[in-house]
Length: 214
Length: 58
Image 1 (tube, rainbow over the protein chains, first blue to last red):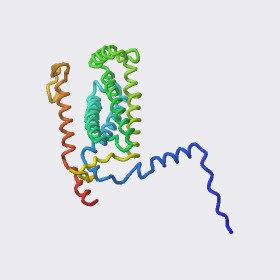
Image 2: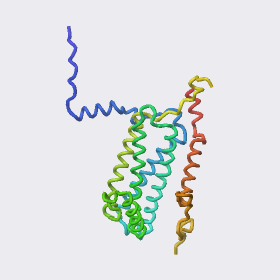
Image 3: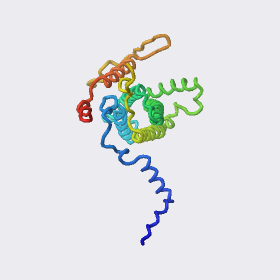
Image 4: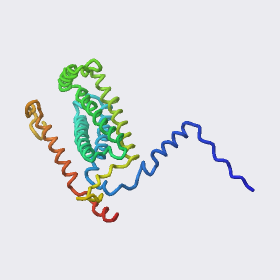
């Protein structure tokens, strides 16, 4: 009579436990699905992807601007071009992100245990605002000087001027090209992974579809 | 020679609209209006292939 082999011992290494937890939380078919519910076939669902697409253009053009420096973006034709690409990609990013936010607000996208999806999206929007505004004071021109002194007075008037200095170019440039973009990208990554985990929020069910008396 | 600096003449202070304590530049009002229009169109316009997918599911 044969004896069944003993079950394998539980994994003790932290890498194995992390892997198992990650696969359990977000299995591959949820992480990269090959189909979506029919209600996702609507223009209103396009604006989240459009936000990510414009963010990619922002980061790509920003990397080129950082590589070449202020003299290039102020005094050469190609520099002007990439400066404009960067600025208009930011305009587009906020435009489509606001439409995405309005759509999700009116869908009550926090339903069905999606509270963290909503919160990460809302915080991304809030963090993206200073990320963009620090770009205005990082231009290295008279416009940046004017904006930074106006911003300094505004921020001092609400009592937060002691924590950072908008007239300090080095500090604002670091915020603009490293700290705040890293925060935005991390938040967007968390937001997308949470969407993949919980799925796209379905539309409201109408009373008539529920069988309620009309 | 500058071929064209901008589509609109930007060589003047921004036009702003005042209403009580609210002060908005005309360019921002235009951007907000465009967002509202795009939002309405995104809800109202049919998505390509949506009806076919709905029919194939039912």
